[in-house]
Length: 187
Image (cartoon, rainbow, N blue to C red; front, side, top):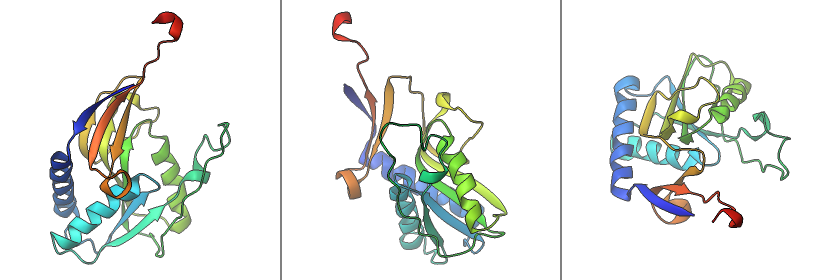
């Protein structure tokens, strides 16, 4: 297994500011907009974006929540190991609001499909947008595209994108991890 740095801490910070500014351009004061971080990995990015909007850009009217999609996934009962649920923290109605889903990596699109189903438990949004840090564009199983993206990555089958956050892994770095798919007989 080898890994290559895709984004350094400085680059992640620049991208976060760019994404925050793009959100401000479209949503201005966020009075009709709700930010939803998708559990578990999207929560780190969503919290960072909300913090930037509040502290750097003085937008204090943001409604923010976290959405767990575990039981809405189409592979919920397919794996050998049971999936662990996270906590949904949404204490408001999304009826007729603009919702921005935030996740770290857009890969197959299945997590977003699950989020689209899960959010309906909280009302019917007027609009839903998607913000991701990394868009793995050639891996989609469903016709889902981000409205805001930090970086587009072309990763092949044996490559994974690993997003590390200071709050969780002690650093803000994005890696492209290549797993060796060769068996001992092929080496």
